[in-house]
View 1 (cartoon, helix red, strand yellow):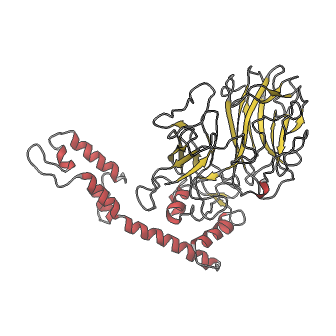
View 2: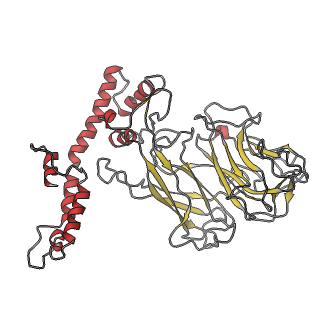
View 3: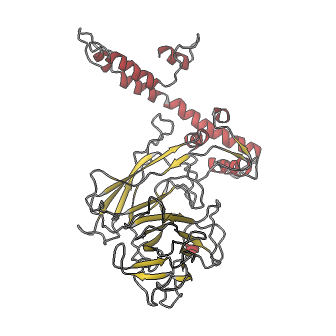
Length: 494
């Protein structure tokens, strides 16, 4: 280990016998070696040996001191990398101002991007974890079959459909801080705070990236609120049927009232819901609610006044519950964002705004209510109006004749980014987008849940974060394309 340190400091001579560059590993090995002999272990811990010999000092503080001493040089290298980048870009094409933002915007547009050489880089492998009960276990009666407290919906895509490569690997805690029972919140609209792991602000630190340091709060979105309380839909609880078997403010696109669609005297959080009936095994029953339309009780009239075209360019979370009283041999329930021609809308990245519940799958083949959720994103170019949300049995997946689907508590809301959006309006540089929906069991004060996110960053992207803090610039380097793929090793970075 001594020879390794000397070599790294510039000493001449042969290569050290141990070429492992991680001195933390080596120091831990050293400490473990001394631990084998109890009489010498105090020497490495800063104590006195069994024979009375005093230690020259504990090992761990020495290691920490050595790690921290490298910060000055690393900070200089980081500042030099930024200055060189700005200078090179300006020498190639004179820039309006000598800032890192301007330089990187030019590189992305004219060098990396499709209008330049078409270089693209290895993206991050991001996975958003599942919602898990916190510690202590929440006190609400969530464990009963089919019951649910708040549903946390996260998205790893930005407002245009591109992956948020800079999501940090951390566990985020969600905590109920205001409930209806103890006061301060309306039932089904309780306040849920969120917090990430501590932030490491020094990007040259060996502890980086650490956590996001994020904190904030959501209010649960209640499907029973009509275009209010964060919910963009109307009659998503399916309580109002002025015309028999057709829910108010929903348009029956395919099927017949009473035959393929009906009001059912059951519900997830009340005594009523929407029922889709497999009358013949072929009818693709579908309903939609259109946006930017005044509410009305007229048959196939009305909609929701919410206008997606005028809302910020952020993702929209959608959440509802389904139940199949008798398991069908076939059938799917699909939710789409559609244009005025009933065609599914794609986001700017080409992702279709759709998600599907397979009614025969292991996750839904139960008589208990099952949660279904997804995320929609509007494209930059306005689609054919009016935009709508559709629930239907998609082509080739009609429910089996004689079986039925119960649907309830449909809600849709604007999502918000948990941390670090940067100047981009689409949140390109930051963490996941999130929303919280009310279930059928109201949360209680101090109930908590956790979501553990992971991210294996590409080497180039990691370097962009350390040296240039590209996340704070709200920019993204291309991670896919038809140009030249850059090897994700040190060659390009060096």
